[in-house]
Amino acid sequence: MRKAIFLFITLFYGVCVFAQQKDYTEIHFKSKLRNYTKILPKTKEFDIDRDLFVQLVDLLTIESFSENEKSDLANKLWLAVSNPQKFDFVYKDYSLKTIKNWGVKIKFEDPNFEPNPYLAKWTVTEDEFIYMHWAITQILTYERLMAYSEKAKVAQKAINELLILEKLKFYQARTDEYAYDYLHRNNDLLKKRGLVILIYNYHFDYIVCEIENKDKMIELLGRLKLEYITP
Image (cartoon, rainbow, N blue to C red; front, side):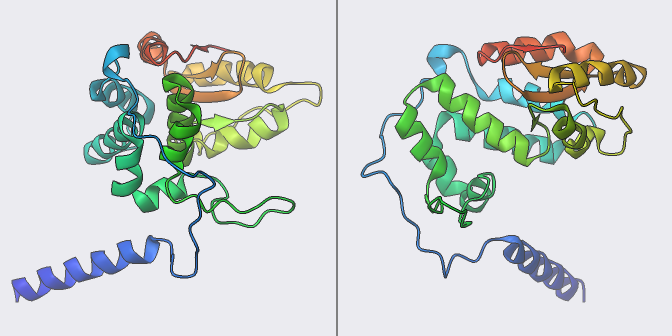
């Protein structure tokens, strides 16, 4: 009886996972690149390792992820950064899901059917930090741990899409306000909860962490040449 129950649970889980994956039977993968690079990003030379992402994920997720989920996300970030070809192969479905509008027809644009988006991006850039910034942004945005907006009105919606902040209420955006100023105002509200919004300096990507971990977060991101500050 126990074996039967176990087999049923295993089968049910497998069906659920399969159902969540894209159906690629009707999709014709097509890369715009003639060849992919065979060179790997130089992570060791820049003192970037898996432990960096373990720490980063722990600070970003706070208590919203289980330990297994944290470990899985850290593995994905590290593999995407250190070996994009292997990442696209091992996490194929996940890789494509993190690319906004992948396989979707957009007016005046050709659909993106790139089968190896992370390897393709690395091939085009061949710059470790440009590529890493892009890869980290795709994954963290998909996981709702990072958001982006230039306008305050958009930021008002975007901050509620962040996993850590989805159930909180914030100020209404002003018509003459930019995202930086809007996030600055809302940081006053978040202080009461021990949280702080950090924004990528000169850009409009932002994240949330606990105030007590702010300096550590900035330090870890600094190792990736990502300059985050408090708006």
